[in-house]
Length: 371
Image (cartoon, rainbow, N blue to C red; front, side, top):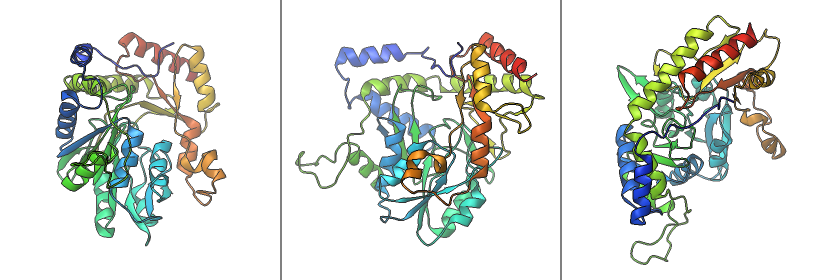
């Protein structure tokens, strides 16, 4: 079975992890954490990086430090992972869902504009499958209405968005910006996350709250509530090794995507598009079956599995999640694009370790299934 994603650990990862073990710096302090925070922040054009244990807690922590009024609204896409809505709910805020763009799968910025109301305090753009949200008009909406931005760049390592005549990396747009370094991400620590910001006060609060808000002068006197969201030096060591070859890793993703696209055009499916204002990092190679096709994504996945090709489905919309339906949430949400692409979309093997022969095998399986 060709795996849908497998990390490539071909650099100095083992050397750096061994160094942690040899020196006994295996917990939540050490030179690799400091280095990884510094290098990732600099790569994304930010002042501060605060490493945490995973991308989900990065979102929860990032939302918390903005101290938004209880019950105020945060606009986000329905087409995303549940981590986003949980970060809002766990901070006693109200999520407001918008549909996604049919080509990029990112949040529809025009719907964001229409959804802003008197209780709206923030917006959470989520860059999907490596393609950026259209940030120029979103920044305009946020500026006009005084909204904070919690940017979820977990899937967009190295992606860029054009603002005027300038290109900026994803992760540089939010008051707080969040990343995941899970095993399937373009840069991985196995598990891990980070929050970026340019605000000194927010950075200080992020560091305190990820570490239980221990006191500066009296350690066990806590002036604020926090969490144990720390990253270990072992995880950061892997991240540092990955950073040493980030250009190579991202280039490999683009080469993989180009080979898929050249071979799959003309089939009854939509291949990834890249908007003129975007530079995608192609975290996953996502395809969408035409509506007129004889089967849906679930049947397509079964047929590819029979050919030895593993896939993953698209996100099920937040507004359709059973748990939130039982809670009485999102009953009025209308997200027809999200509903359609969930039923028609999946992504193909796209990991860093995929080989050229594996890519060709996937292409043969897809062409054979759809021809």
